Image (cartoon, rainbow, N blue to C red; front, top):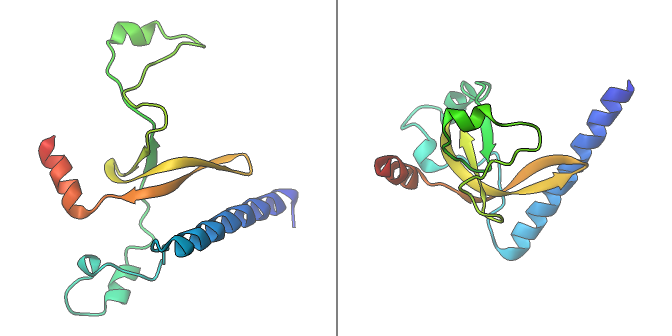
Length: 138
């Protein structure tokens, strides 16, 4: 086994340990722990073998991004940016980060660091009805 593979295994073990700890805390608090085998009723197609149907889409790649904040600035300010420049964002310190899948808000969370790598702990999942309200507000 190469050093790189050993490194990746160690990082994976660190993340697994962090996720197990989070699940224990959530179960102690009475919050629902994430279970990858649970499929919400609204996500299951009517009739047919839902497990077989969901298996067809599990390997489709999507882009997941975490957004710290946003701002609008004129192009002239962008052209003046240099190393050390500060760009003010609309988000306040301590606010949850937005988690987007293919550009759509699906959750919010807080930043965590495990083994010197950033991750995000989800604190709020956006319901489909809330997503529709946000889209309609524009």
